[in-house]
Length: 196
Image (cartoon, rainbow, N blue to C red; front, side):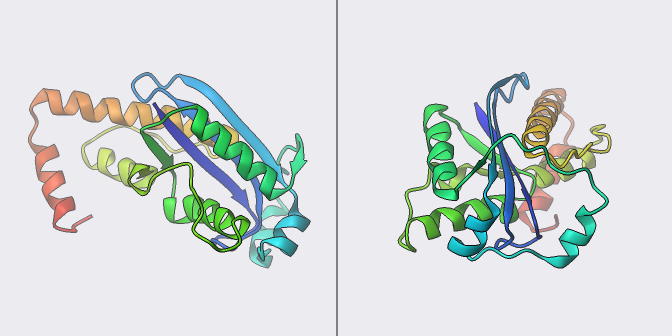
């Protein structure tokens, strides 16, 4: 079982003010969503207590977008406790993010500040983190039809969509390997040499 993570923020850097988080716990073989978590961050808490930043270019971009749905607002400490509880309850092998250097870095930074800058006890291990975009690029090289992602900019909807797409791509690789086509071996060799 795996987890898919997605954030909606007011910027494109790890210090960006988080608006929402979405997590989907799913079966990577079937794409079945087993459990989900979503929450809204209290912006004033993020700005004052977590030194988060609102980027003007993101506000400009957002003004023409549909506003994120508001279901409840919570302080960051409370959200982190809930995220830890969710991840500890649902044992998972891998945590996927569309861009781990963004989504995972934001979450890690919030845990660090919440823990008063001492190394936090994270509910995941470093070797569980996986990159959705890298998987997407690899399967496209192998001829997988993936279509253009429909990004809703609602973290839970995006995390669920990513989970279903991850399942599709992992099954494509499994079937591809079973076919005996040696392009996968050549692609793996290219990745190891740093070609991708």
